[in-house]
Length: 393
Image (cartoon, rainbow, N blue to C red; front, side, top):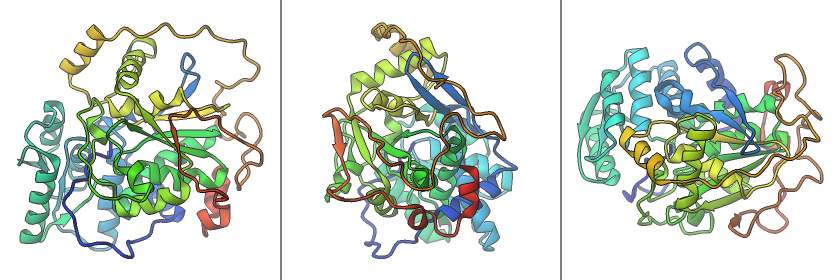
């Protein structure tokens, strides 16, 4: 998840590098030979499609951004060793990518990082340096090492190549022709990439954050200063400060943001295990937990990761007693059929501009982000010079 923002205040970025939909197409071409598409699964009891990034290499979508960043750097002739700070998933993704490309990689992880994630980083041969008790201390130390030794510091989300890599998740969702896609938000890299990939189809992009762990929500409301996030099961999105580049993208493309209660998150994670037989980490279940408050005819939630400690999962299964799911209603549409390869998606084909008249009913817990009168960007502005994307839709 997007777990790698801290209060370390770098110099303000007045004109951060931009990322466009065309960059996501380039990332898709790079990653195709390394990462097969992850499955789409219809969770009938939730009334929602699931994009199963918990089945991705290293158990998280993070490997997409890390691998794309290393491949793009190679194309530019940048062969420096790479260093990153992470509480787990970004470090694992970087370690795997560096192993595949034979690039030296260092991961700085705070003391107390989940053991399963520390072991995953070491397994792929990256150098693990544990420093500090918080991510922020680890990040500051990693930046100091990068400056001292000439390493390339790779952000977990506030990097154009990383965002483009994460956007390939959206490209794989596109053939489903959803009307709503729900994405967990920490630093915002996944949400920014998915929004760039799907907005021209008229898809509503809805973010999900945990109560009292809402740095991006505050930043989008005009307060980008660091926060003191509460402890949460969704440690992968427990950030103190939103990214600069990701905030700019989401300010234009994010439609809504749902604040999820911790109890809802715990129940959703357990229901995923018991009803869908899927293992997700806390942040991985976050988008689906938000989905119960968002209406849509064809919703899709990104299950962003599955790296949860066995002890934590066992405790949740012992402690949480989910409510019985609602009885199914008679189906009036074939909402659970996945469009066949090479055929048009079920239902009307998506237009390249936002669909007229489509609305999404949001509960009061949803934070409205769009300003009055602000229209969704049209295809020309959201996807400049990317005709291949229209072909996918």
